[in-house]
Figure 1 (cartoon, rainbow, N blue to C red):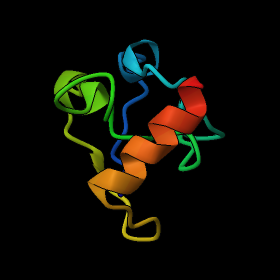
Figure 2: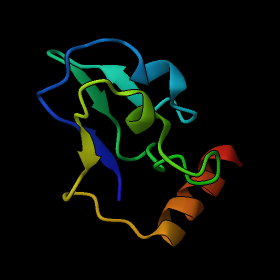
Figure 3: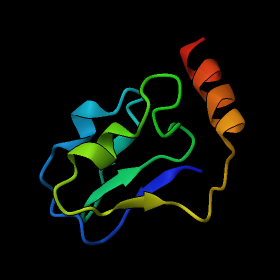
Length: 81
């Protein structure tokens, strides 16, 4: 499942640089995660790096983009070629 950033985001800028897929960008009000690029760091790390560094715990699973670990790994392979 892709991740998403809730409106509790304080725009602290720590999540964007740790995303290995460049899936995080500043939106109109707070940071956003592009679901087509988010692999929850599968293939890169053991756990999502943005979740680890987020000081307000506003990064959650996105119920609108359910994906299995296998699907996330396939996306990782497609993105990294």
